[in-house]
Image 1 (cartoon, rainbow, N blue to C red):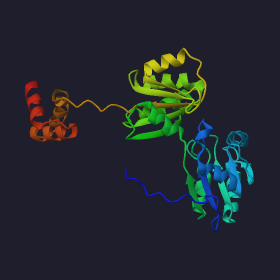
Image 2: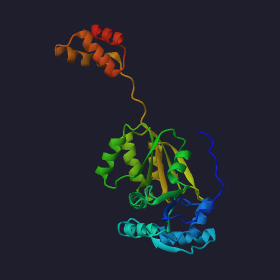
Image 3: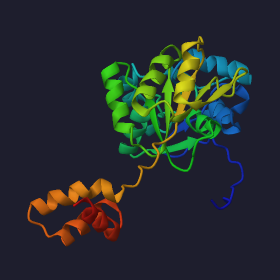
Image 4: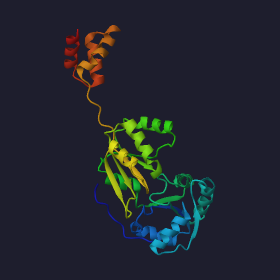
Length: 293
């Protein structure tokens, strides 16, 4: 990417006509990762909507700041009722700051419903970016980062979890998951079963905190570690994508050619169709068909 042109620091707490909704990333463990914009927004926003007001108060104490605006809770159990209230406030010209317990709002955390409603209501929505457990775990995993997908938490029920993993078995991109420490062993066992023991992966725990730990290795090794360890802390699991499928061999596609010729298709045309589908040489496939006769 080219280097961006930076604008001078602005008063990010200024209220614009019609108000605005600001999503702000909070530290995922280390309070020193709080951005200057986050601090300014906390000190100037009219309303701070927090996933857990107690967690927010701990962050404020760590940052040694206070919030003069109104603090309200906004979480998965009340977001349906609170969304309309907050939207009305921002439409009245208020600046609403949305923060979650850690990391980016709306990424496996509350916030999406509010953003959706704000956009539909035609109000300004912006972001004060910052820490992300997803990107931090991905960067530390040692696995490919050029293409990846975030899958959040897997279903708790075994059947639903395995169905989801079956859908991802051929996923070529690196995958990032979240998991609770007490369910990590069960999750890794499912990954081991569905993806195989040799699939490379990493378990990242307590990111940016004092006891940060990143374990890297095949799923078999990570499962053995989880089985013998009392795992604690916030967990992100990064799994390498599926390896490319082995190229088909001409002799493996002879039967497919025979199926087509049995249907009355000329040998030349059958070989051409199967070779194109299998991405193998027509000449080599034709030779394999003749050799098998």
